[in-house]
Amino acid sequence: MMSKRTVIGQTMTDSTRTRPLTFDEQYEAIGRQDSFYEGVFVTAVLTTGIFCRPSCRARKPKRENVEFFRTATEALRHGYRPCKLCRPMEARDETPAFIRELIDELHRAPAQRITDADLRLRGIEPAQLRRWFKRHHQMTFQTYQRMLRINAAFNSIQKGESVTATAFDSGYESVSGFSDRYRSVFGASPTRNSDSAIINIVRFTTPVGPMFACATSDGVCMLEFTDRRMLETEFRDLMKRLRAVILPGSNPHLEQLQQQLREYFDGTRTRFTVPLVAPGTPFQEQVWRVLQDIPYGETRSYKQQAEALGNPAAVRAVASANGHNRISIVIPCHRVIGSDGSLTGYGGGLHRKQWLLEFEKEHAAER
Image (tube, rainbow, N blue to C red; front, side):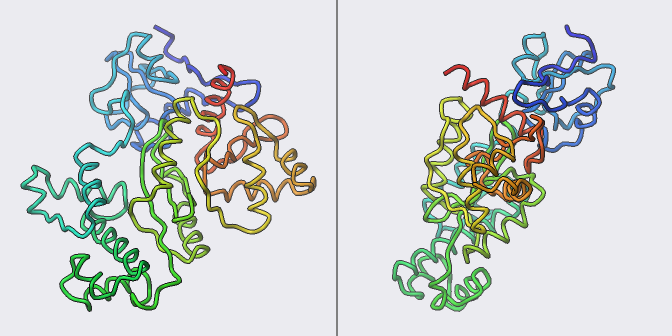
């Protein structure tokens, strides 16, 4: 096996001359039980012969007993076996099959109500399901169901259905109860809300951590890592700009986005075609359009981006606009680096920025 202090795969590249993660930084990252360094490295334990993802809940090993690899495959090649607790060969925070089935069922028939008694009949513990939804969707399973019903009701009313018919079709026992719930979400009664809109949201996993995606009927308006610090601010700004509320629900643009992201992470897609909705200031929108012109596998400096806009002095403004991009990866702000070739700020974390650039460079070279 390699020496105890080897840092595998975190070397510099010609296009991303950033300082690699040190042994100490990787060791400090393990044991936190979060997804921030998911996909960037795995931890191998010499005394047990197993390797773990950075977020493993197992007791943190002594520093003299660990070494780090960039991928699970490299750890396997060096004789380690995957941890049974954190399962590093599987996608972290993947939605369990039984929960996916529940969500699909509700999306097909949002008016139904699945009670705790119904869950127990299916062999599902309500408390376990409640904790999972609170952790990954910031709401309980019962609240998720109510939001789906309101989403379906909004669409019915927008199509011309009467409030009374919609209320009972949505599973409410009275029009007044439906109206109260509707008003609590939209801030107006069902008959006075024709100017409002809905932003649908979905959560899914990627090789570098779980993400949230949002879309309106016109296109995708957000794609962010779930641990981004400015996420709540972005949600509020998006709702204000689009005069909309964010609710769970099906959306063809979200389905198209997830399919194209799967192809991207498989290395078979280099450009996205899903429709986008990216409201911002006129300057921000111009910056975001120019970002999409940076070829896959290549990088540009902030100065080069400012020059492409015809405003060479706007380097800081370009950097600021990059930082306010809400549609990660698809609008590739990760492809912009410092003039000296070093990585600079990235909302998803510099380790993810480096991962994405190295991933794209590797697959671009294969073409």
